[in-house]
Length: 143
Image (tube, rainbow, N blue to C red; front, side, top):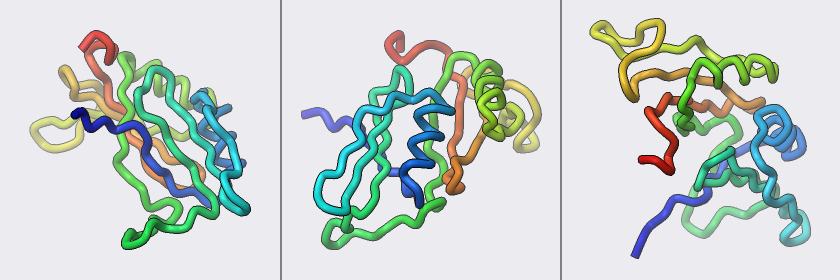
């Protein structure tokens, strides 16, 4: 049996603002925007080429025995691209603050690209949820 990661929940305060950010500004596909029960709305979006979607929720009661993430508390989710400079330029053109490209070097984080799998940048959504972008050597379908 496979255990596939297919949906990640990202805590946000305003679904419409988050939908605009991820859908229109970042260009992710809006797969679903539905009120599944009175007061409970789900917006599901998928980054281009990804096998994992992002669920933005409003009014969803926590599953029994689980905790609740506050908006802006999610950090470290990672997107992969094959051209990190082009990804940064796209983010900046969309009005998203993206850090300069960095890599891990002998003294910690250093400016510029590193070797294979060692080039990163970060950005935040309007709630402060932090995302990493990593340069991959090829498309996922080719790995």
